[in-house]
Amino acid sequence: MREHRRVDVTSLCDSLHRRNPPPYEKYDGFIVEDADKPARWRGFKFYTDPEDHIRIVSAFAEATDSSPTDDLDRVAPALLKTTFNHDNWSLSPEPIIPFSRRYYPDKQFTYIADQIR
Image 1 (tube, rainbow, N blue to C red):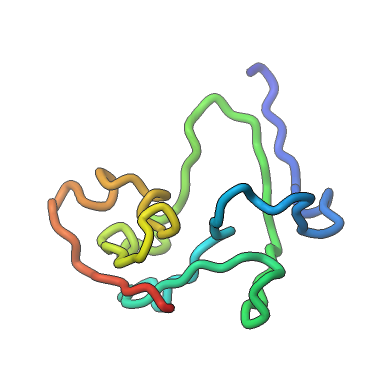
Image 2 (cartoon, rainbow, N blue to C red):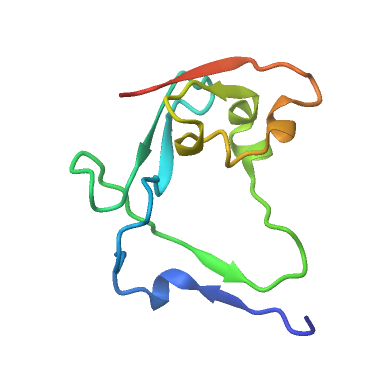
């Protein structure tokens, strides 16, 4: 790419909705209680869980010639040392963060977070 552009996605959105429900159950994201010492977690879905009042306040998209990155190492390093107990692996935070990133280099988990049911 010769020209990199950055777009404020939230300025282009009128609302958050789905035209059709997903073909299988999944969460839009996860809430982990206490990112410094993770002990409990749960999934959430926008606009379907009445107890959740979650709103995206900022989102940017940028063209780049690299893999996606995040700030978890700096912002919430304990999440990378957590094993997430779950009823269904594919509906947990586990598949989002690669095992090798969470388990290595120490080859151990420090925290165990239970799913809130």
